[in-house]
Length: 438
Image 1 (cartoon, rainbow, N blue to C red):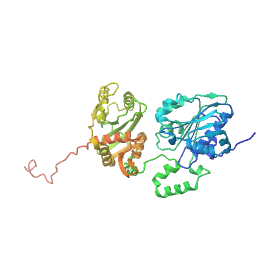
Image 2: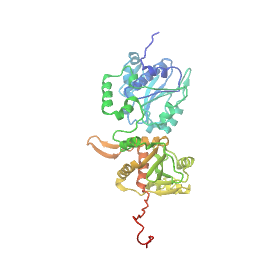
Image 3: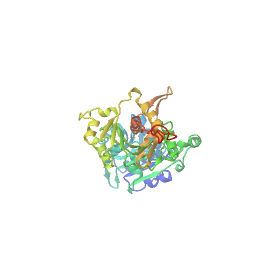
Image 4: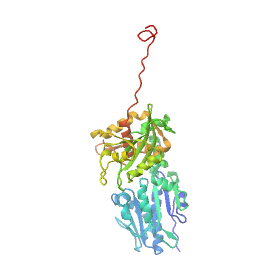
C-alpha cells in the first residue's frame, strides 16, 4: 500500500482528525489556512472517490459574481502541489473533476445562489471561504442541505475566515461553539511553516507604517476602525476619553429609537436601530439592534422586550411610504403599536453628507454603552468613502453592511436638538427697582 503524506500547519492537524460536522479556521493574512483547506478538500475528494463514493465538493463564498471570484484557482494550486493529486484530478480552465468521474468541484455565491444550493446534487463537503460576511439567514439555509451520510462519513461544513466584526454570524456560530463536532482553530502567520519571505516584508512594513491596522491584518483581531473611515479618529478619541464603556440609562429621560428602515426579503437591506437618550449635553447611546429580512413585528418585539416600549421612534422620510404588499407605512404601524413617532424630513441630494457632518459635529457629546452597542460601533468604524480608483476621487459613502448602522446614527444626529439653557439674570447689588431700597 502506498501512503501519501500531507503537510499542514500544526494547529490544523487536530481540526482534520476524527469525525466532525464542522471544521474551520480563522486568523490573519499569511496563515496558510486557505491553501490548507483547499488541499484537504482535494485529499478528501480523493479518499471519497477511491472508496467508491460519488458527489461534489462545493466551494462557496458570500459574494461570487463569476468563477474569477471563486476558490477555483486556490484549489487548482493546492492540487498541483501534490503529484498524486494531480494524477487523480482532471484540471481544466474552468473546472476540476476526478478522472474516475466520481468527484467534482463546484463553486457558488451565497448572496445570489443560496436558494439553488438546495437543488444541487450530493454535497460531500461544503467549504465556505471568506465566510465573515455570510449572514445568519444564509447559514440557516445552507446547513440543512448538508444531510448526506454513509458508512463512517457524513457531509461536512468547512469554514475559513479573517475576523472583522465581533457580531458576525460566523463568530457566534462557530468560533464560540462548545460542540465537540465543531472543530475550529485560530491560526496566524507565525503558525505557517511555509510563511513566504515576501509576506514577511509586507508584514514588517505594515507593523512600521500602519500599526493601527496591523493586529487585524496579521494577527486576526477584530477591526476597530477601517483606514479612512469617516469616524475612525472620532472613535479612537472616544476610547481615549472613556466615552466607550458602561453607560447607564436615565430613568427620567425620553428613550429615542433612531431607525434605518430595511426590508423583508432575503436580499433586502438590514434594519438598524440606535437606542439613545439626550441627558444634558450628553448623547447616551444605550443599545444597538440590527436584523435583515425580518418583518416589523420582529423589530417591535425587540424594542418591547428590552424595555423600550415607550420610545420615541425617529424614522427617515421613507417611513411615511406604504409597504408594497400591505399598503401601510412604518409610521402608521408604529403608531398603531403604541409608539410615538417623529419622521425626519428628507435632506435632499446632500442627505448622506449632511448626516456624516452632523455625526462628526456631535461625536464629542456621544457616549457608548460598549457591551450592547458593539455591532453599531463596528459599523461606525468601517463606514467609509467609495473611491473611483481611476480618477482618485470620492464618490460618497460605500453602501455595504456598515451603512445601515451609520445611517441610523446619522438620522439621530440630524434630528438632535440641543437642550435649552436657562439664562439667569444676575445683579451685582440689590439697588434698583425691586431691591430693598426701592
